[in-house]
Length: 148
Image (tube, rainbow, N blue to C red):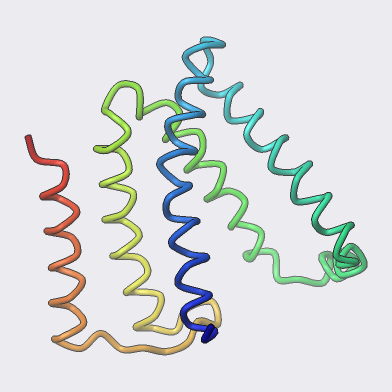
């Protein structure tokens, strides 16, 4: 199987997981009556699983480089926490589909900007008229799935 197909399938699975994560954590937040506490739970579980994978693959030694990393790169954790806490709080009130629609719209916009400017070391991929139209069609398609 070509690497691009493998990567596409992995990211498709990750994309499937985002609304499932939102629905499960939103339900947990309602069950324990605290979206913030549910956010903590999702990160503790994620930390345990990520830690186990890092240990199992022998990648733990790479964590020694962390103090040398540019500090702005650690903002990724802040964005993850923001997502997990906000989706847990908003999804039960707004609907998982509606919440994920706006998350996806934000992802389309920010991904296009990151690629266009090559931000954070991303591969430079300028926005052409065709690419902008494709992003627009994707946004309309996602919006259409949420109508009615």
